[in-house]
Amino acid sequence: SANLNERLLLTIIGSHFYPSAHALLGPSGRFPLKFSSSTLVTCVTSANWEGNMTVQVFQHDHSHGSNAVQFLVTSYMKVMFVFPSRALEHRSTEVTLVGVGFRSDYSVIFGDVKSVCESTSPSKILCISPQVAAGPAGIALLVDGYKEQKLPFIFY
Image (cartoon, rainbow, N blue to C red; front, side, top):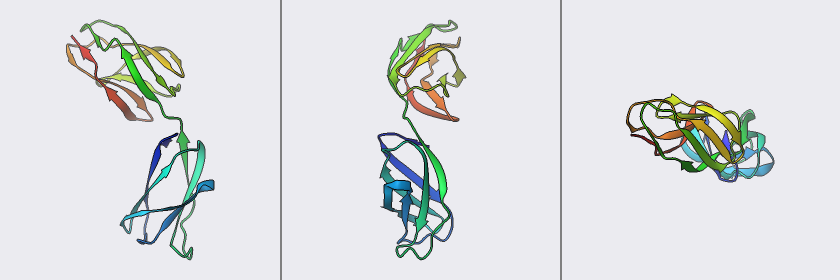
């Protein structure tokens, strides 16, 4: 997946890539590839579209091309503010995350512990902090198994 309205880095793993190869991204057109090895190339583009896309890798003369591979570009979730930024140890605390692009397919993680989320809108998440021991924990959104944008959070 990729972040909407930001730069998109595609890492393409395959075989028989050449330094002169380029990528064809759906309706967006042709983009140069950075050659890392015969099995790895990367491409940086503007991610100004959303939804299912395809990518194909071609040699400079279009004589050889890869099969089209589909990928998904999704809206970018970003936390801009967390209140409060700390909580008492071994107590549940209501925590509000304010930001943009929030979806329903996420979890809020304090350290390594998932919290209970009570409500979500595109710009606000209301969750309950877990009851953990004192110390720095950090707070992050867990999306598709990956922690996104870890922010400071302390239990005291």
